[in-house]
Each structure stands twice: as C-alpha cells, then as structure tokens.
Length: 606
Image (cartoon, rainbow, N blue to C red):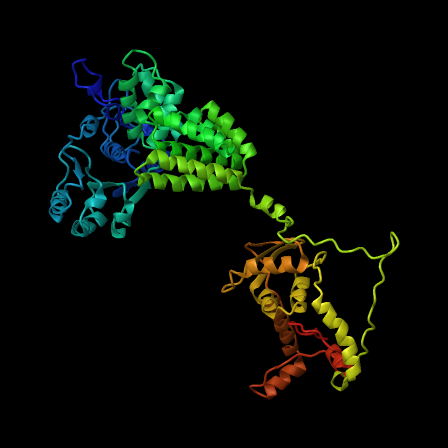
C-alpha cells in the first residue's frame, strides 16, 4: 500500500480523507479484483497491450484508480541505482516510484490527460482530443487519455471518436470508465478491452478497514467494522468515507469505537435485537414483535431500515439452510452464525421465502407511507400471521389428501368372508374370435349380455393405484390403451429417452417438441398409476421410437435393394420404387384373420 507522500508530511499539512490517503497506487494494492489483475499481468508479460480499455462497475470499486495505475504501467521508467537494474518498458510490477509515477498519481502529468465526460460531453471536446493525439508525448513513453463517466458523451461525440479509437497512433492509449455500461454504444465497446470490476466482499472489505485502522492507530470493535463493511455495499470508497465519519464520531474521547455508537451514527438497528424481532415474528408473537420494533424506533432506528435488516437476516438463514458453508464468512458475527444456524434448522424453505416476500413488499410500502412506524407494524402483523399458516404439505394432510396430492380413498365395507379368504370374483367368459374378422357378427343377445358388465365397469370408479410400468415402450402402450392418441404420438415422435425407472423419467425433446409435454406426462402418470412421477428434461437422449423405426425400415430397404434380383428389376423398370416390405409372418397372420394391435413399427423382415 502506497499512502500519498503529501499526506505523510509535516503536521501542518492539510488533512486528506482516508479515501484519498489510502488510494491504491499499484495493482498489488487493489482488493477484490484478482481476475482483472491477472489478465493485465499476463498481457504485459506477453507484450499484448491493448490500445483501449473500458472499465465498468458500481461506484467506489476502483475504476479511476485502476486507470491511473494503468497509465503508470504504460510509462514506467526506473533508472539504475545501487545495483538495481534499470526498467524501461511497460510493466505492472512497480515496487518503487518511477520517473513519471508521482506526477501521474497527482493528476498533473502533461501526457496523461483526464477528462470528465459529465462536463465535457460535446463533439468539440472529442475533436480537441483527436487533434492532440497526432502529436507524440512530451515526456512519457505513451500519451494516455482517461475519460471518466464516458457514457455521458453525446452521440456525435461517440461517433467522432470511433475512427481514432479503432486505429489510434502507436503512442496513444485510451482508458474509459463508466458506471452505466449499457449507455455506451456497442460500436465503442467492440473497440475496447472490457473489465468488469466487482463489488468487494464484505469480509475482505472489513479486513482492509482493519489494516487502515492499525495504520491510523484507531481502536475499533470488529462488529463495528463489519457494520461499516455491510453498509458500504461493496464500495471501498464508501467504506473509507464511513470509517472517516466513524472515527470522528466515536474516537474523540480516545477510546475504542463501539458498535453501539456506529448504530446511532448510521441509524441501523442492533443486530441482536433484529434477531430477537425475527424470532418473535417467526413464533407468531405479535405483541412482542411490535414492542421490539417500538423499542428500536425509540432508540433512533429507521423502521424501513429495521425491515431491511430483517430481510437480510431472513436471507442469511436461507443461505445457512441451503449452503452451510456460508457461516464461515468473515462479515458475520458469532451471534449471527449461532442464532442463524438455529433458525435454519427449525424453519422450512417455504416459510423463509414467504417471509422474504412479505418484508420486501413492506419495504416498498414504507417508502411512500406518511406513517412509517404504523406501516412497519402492519408488516409485522402480516409476517407473524403468515408464520402461523401451515405449509402446503400440512394443509394437504389436514384436508385429507395424501402426500401425492390424491384424496385418500374412503374405507370400503368389508365383505362377509372368512379371515384370510379372498372374496369371490365373477369372471365373464372370453368372447370367441372367428377366423375371419370381417365375417364376425355376434347376435344382439350376445352384445347385450357382454355390454352390460362393460357399462357397469365404466360407471364404477376403478382405482389406478398399483399399476407398474416396466419400461418406456410399456408407457407408450399404456397411452394407447387409455386412448390418449395425441400423447402416444408425442411420446413416439418427440421424446429422446435418457433415463427410465419407476417414478422417474428423464428425456430430451426433439427440435420443435412441445415444452408442455413433461408437465402433461407427469399429470397423466399420476392419474393412471396413483403415484407421483418426476418427469424432467435432460440432454443426450437416445433416438425416438419413430426414428428407430425409420432407421430399421431404411436398413431393410437397403438390404433388399442390394439383392441381385431386386436390383435387376429396379434397373429394368426405371422410376420404380419399393413401397412396402412384408414378411412371411405378416402374410400368415393376415390369412389366419388375427387382429393385429396398432404398432408404428413395420413387421420384421425375413
């Protein structure tokens, strides 16, 4: 870390805020931006330095600072001294201040020009840059143009910059910084090497603040540092500004800066009391929850901020439930880890997600409410009543539904049979089949006799439980038996099977296949079998049944066309083609008059 030398001068020097005093001066000082630093390090080592860079990210993550560090790296020169070799090439390893470094850090180097696009938006400002870019640098190796908030440039200014940006002189580099990358034209973005600077993790930011407090000889509690890091929302500049304010607020007496003092300064709620409020709301204790909110309001906490803190703790509990490793974060206090883990072990995901939705909607209501405290009370009322609501599974059980969602069958009267003896079952005789289906014509009396039991069976509800499906072809056959021809055709032509087992099917849809097929199949299977099936989409499926049938048909035709007799016939009659392939079994079945079940596949060849 390289503090500003002017800040470390005589005691009479003007005070410089921490955000400027501890501004990084080299790539080693940047925190939380390791991917960008690694890419630039490799580019400089391989001498693959780009002509233009575009830095984007939220406020305070180091865009302008990175631009100045890049300008130093482009023009780094270090003379030989005391056995140290001279450095006269671009590099990101700048362990000592070079010939141009201090001037670049102070923004007073004649060859490193910084322009604020918010106040220089017109084409005239860009025209001046284009004219000056033709001339070689005065002192440094290359001339660097840093344009901050570049998205503020006008359309004409962007268009005027395109040609020079695409083919700049070899002694010119451009560095752009912006917080709104979507407002930068794509024609500019395509000419730059883009780096997205990330928000800094709260734990990493708290550790960075601890180092600065040690350098400033400031004593501060760890919980207070974590509070500052969370309030900064990933911005190092915001964190240092808040730390500056915290030092002025709590260290006047020479003692340690306490977390309680920071809560009063920031207007945030006490974390332990927020957890107490969360636990009271989740237990349905509305009176205790309203009393805790009133107590925090009297202590200076903003009701909207209290609800935000509640939402953050709800999110923390959800993360601890789904990803227990999140408890190792440095930004969490010991109380948050312990009590958050206890809540994660007792609350379900449905309860937590419902609480999150209620709190987020409540925060939106408070922003436009003339009575924030009353609105926050009503949000707590909704939250506590929602906590007492049963989960969907419990509601189904109370309504008499099973776990699969199907109603539990009513107990049927037991027949008067002896214990262990099965009730008698009447079996209707199977109808006789005539050798020739076309000649079969049953008598009217036989039709009436056989139709009566069928009508009774159709009128009676037949339970579907206990139906087992051996494989995918059995499923297709079952769809045919259920006369669901549309589903049967979809299974044959749109499904590429990946995995099939009892209760679970995974398949890949063919191009153009219906995306509603998995949901429809899941519902049909539950209706047919009485059990819940999991139907999911996956990749890498086998060919569909129709594709397999077509492949076999093509293989049959290829084999027959290769036969010398068939080949000679086709050659003798140009334009002739094979319409169908029939085997001996097909002819014998047709003469016997057997009824063939519907099958999309052709009969096997002989």
